Image 1: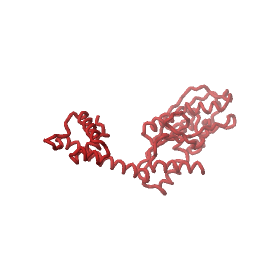
Image 2: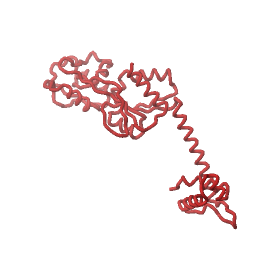
Image 3: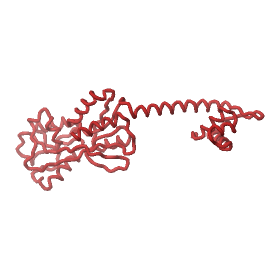
Image 4: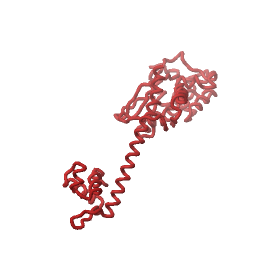
Length: 290
């Protein structure tokens, strides 16, 4: 490893070839200059200066290091410019994750319309995942932020209330015997059904045990299975109401209590977001107010 904190002393000495003058230029003592150079020589295993009589000259290794440091300054400047530009410019890709049920809500369409009008230079990269995977992606910097259906405490994350979604039991339209039915599962079903059952507080005697006749990773496929008599399931109400074959599905309201769950926006708690990301989150906040 090279101690980059020694670069300033070496660069001053390399350009002046006089340790006293070098120390004056960078507000250090001459012994401080010598110590920094000795540290670099130890790290690199080479001599950076050659003494000829009373004069000091750069060695070949010293010239290469000086060239490296100048390029390093250029790269740091480019990085700083790029980061500063990201803070203010509405360009680039915003990456965020959410459960598929959030994609079927009105919020995604509203975001697309707002983007087309107000920040067309911003692209979207949207990942559909269950809440645990959304959190993993945010923590791993794979997503700039995400939507989750449950709160999992973590000191590196901040959660912001976004909205509530209602969970409903759905069956085929002409189902006659609910208790003899089987269930259809999908990613996130375990959490959603658990929350729904907790809210019923004993009103589940007429429900069948959890035996499954269908499983899929897409909500549209779940709805098609129910519509075609394959089984029953619990889903967010808005997913059912936007389904094109909703006439073949029945939402069972009469025998059960309303079940709602909080949706959160999750992001890293100590990470400054680029302007493009904070702008997208702001659009969602405005939807919440509306």
